[in-house]
Image (tube, rainbow, N blue to C red; front, side, top):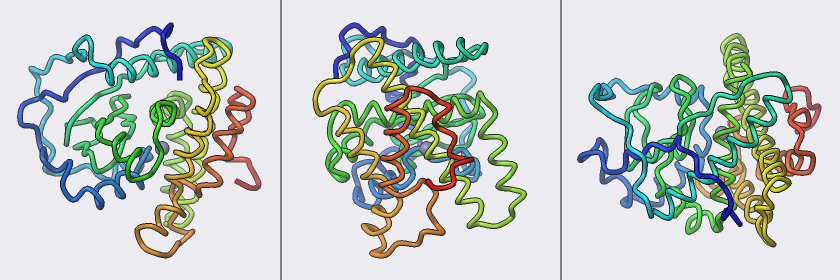
Length: 286
Ligand SMILES: [Zn+2]
């Protein structure tokens, strides 16, 4: 992946050095369980996060001043450039649709951190909180993606960010709110899960739209990159994760879609660069 010319976003907030933190030390131990849970929740949908609001959540410190990552931090620079690339893409798309794109913040944290959606924990994997419009990532997840899920590569890591930003786009467009209202009306777990799958696959498709447009604009892709993202999308499909963790698959419990579906929708966005191709809610087959 080539990001040399990419402007780094100023919207990265670095909380990795925040005191002893809460739940710190949970990373690195029990890694298998944590990694599998993290993978399962990769790109946790906002409804799930909202359901995780913990009573033990510490109040965000009023004195907290958001800190940018230190200069020279390679991983943080990578994240900031990918985020900057998503900003350029979505500004372009929103302007074309006569809308204004509000950039999300991206928070780097270790272990656990307070969010407007309750305590964010590493074990949840990267996630987006609609209430504060921030993407949260513990970079330890990238090690799990590489080692446990066998999905290495910078473009696989970029896909993870682009997927979360896809949830932000859904939030700005009012799609997430509609889905959550429909989920509550359905009053039925299987129907709510089916809607969650469509929301997640759309975020994958939006990640593909970003990849297409970012590459058209700045030639970010190098040989093998697309395969890395597809491999990552496949590695975190519900069917594959359930087979690994439970030895069996229960389609009604899927919340993110199968490996094949995640790959298909990412490809669909990537092929066209057109978000109108991402209407997973009207699609007869996913
Ligand atoms: Zn997601």
